[in-house]
Length: 599
Image (cartoon, rainbow, N blue to C red; front, top):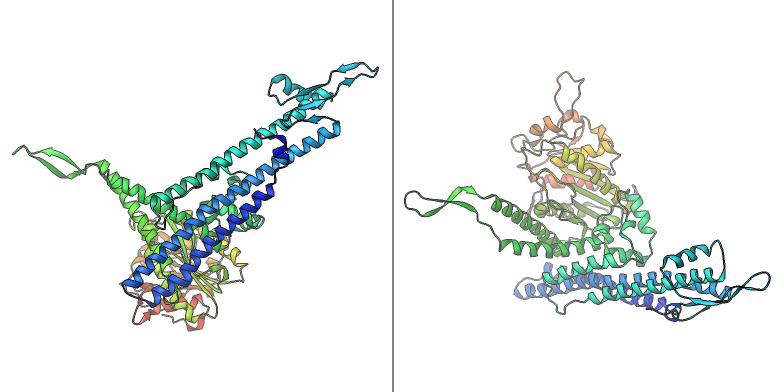
C-alpha cells in the first residue's frame, strides 16, 4: 500500500518528462520511416537496377518496417506514462484536499492514513465524545458515520470521513501503480531487424491490453461516433498534442477512420492497422491451410470395391473452408498492392502515398491517396463499381497512380488522386449490380469522406475536387447527391449504368460541371443494360425511357474516349503514355475545361 508521504510528495512532472522522452522516440520512428520511404527507397528504385540494388532495397525496407514497429511500440509506452501521470495527479489532488481539510480542523494524519481527532465537549464543558483515531473502513457503521458527518459534524464523524477519503486515495493510487506496472512490464519486444508475424501479433496483443488499462489520458468512449466530419475535427483540435499522440497509439483503427482529421494523422494510424491486420491474416491463413477438410464425399464402387472420389459431391465443410481461404488470400493480395504502392513512392516522380482508410471487415476496404490531399490544389476521388473490394485494390490503385502521372504535368499546383474503396460494392454483375441497396448504404459514407476531405483541406475553396465514378460507383454518387449537397466541384461519370436522376442539373454541382465518358455499345454494354435499374425516369415523359449520363438528353459534357471496353478508360502505355480517355479526365481534374475533347 502506498503511504501518505509517497503520494503527497509524488512528482508526476517526472513521469510527464519521461513521457516526453518516449514521444521523441515515437516521432523518430515515424520520421525515420518517412525518410527511408521518400529519401532513400524512392531514388534507389527509380535510378538503380540489378542484384545489388535489389539487396539494398530489401535492407532499407527492413529499416522502414523497424521504424514503424518502433513507433507503434514506443507509442504505447508514451501513452502509458502520460496516463499514469494523469491518473496519479487526480488521486494526489484528492489526497491534498483531504489533508488540507484535516489540518484546518486540527486533526493529525499519520503516514498510513489514520486520522486522530480531539475530544468533543458539550456547552457545559463536559466531554461529549472522547478523542480517538480512525482508519479507513468499509464497514456499514463507519460508512453511516461517514455520511452523518455532513449532518452531525462531530469530530468522530468528520475524522472518519477524512480517513475514508485518504485511505481510498491511497488504495486507488496503489491499484493504479499495480495496473500500470503490469502494463509497462508487458511492453517488451524481441530484438532483431527481421520482423516476424509473431512479433506483430504480440504488438496487437499489447495494444489491446494497453487500450484497456490506460485510462488517465484517453477514453475510447470520447472518440466521436456517428458525428459529422466537422465535429470530428473540432474534437481532435480540442486535444493536446500528447493526447492526440496517445489516441493514435491506442486506438489506431478508430482514429484512422475519422473523416475530417488531417490526412497525415489518418495515414499514421491506418498504416499501423494494416501491419497488424497483415500479420493476423497470415497467421490465420497458415493455420487454415494445414487444416483443410476432406474435399469430396466418397462412394464405394460396386464394380471392384475400390473407394473413388465423387467429384459431384464436394463437402459443405470444404466449401466453407475454401471460401474463407479465398477471402484471406484476396485480402492479403490487396494488402500487398497497398504495400507495393508505398514502395513506388519516388518512382517516376510518384508522390508519397497516404492510407486514409483501411479495414478487413467483410470483404475489406481501402482508401489510398497519391499525394497529400490536405495541401493539394487539385483533388480527384475515384469511386469504383461492381466487384471492387480490398482483394482487387491493386488495379484501382494503379488507375489513380496513372491519373496522377497524367494530371501532374497539366496542373498549376499540387495534385492528389484518391482510390476510394470505402463501401461494400456489389460483387456479382447479375445478382447484385441491379440492386440499389449498395448505393443507398454507401452514399452516406462517400458524402462523409468527401466532406471530411473538404474539412481537412480548410474549406470548399481550398482545393478543386473532382469525383470520378466508374460504373456502379456513378450510381452511388448519384444517390449521394440526392442525400445532401455533395462536397465536390466536378462529377465525371464513366461507363455509367445510371445515376438515378434524369438531368445533370439534378446532381447539385451545376450541369456545366457534370461530365460523361462511355465507349460505344459494342465496347461497353453497361450503360444501356444498367439503365433500366439505375437510369433516371420521368413519369411525364410519354416515351418513358430511362436516361443515363452518356445520353444527350442527360445534359452532361460528353467527353471523347478511346476505351476498348468497360474497364479501359484508364489505359496507360509505357511508350505512348496516357490514353485520350485518361487525358480528358486529367483536364477536368485540373480545371482545364476548354481543352477537353468532346465526342
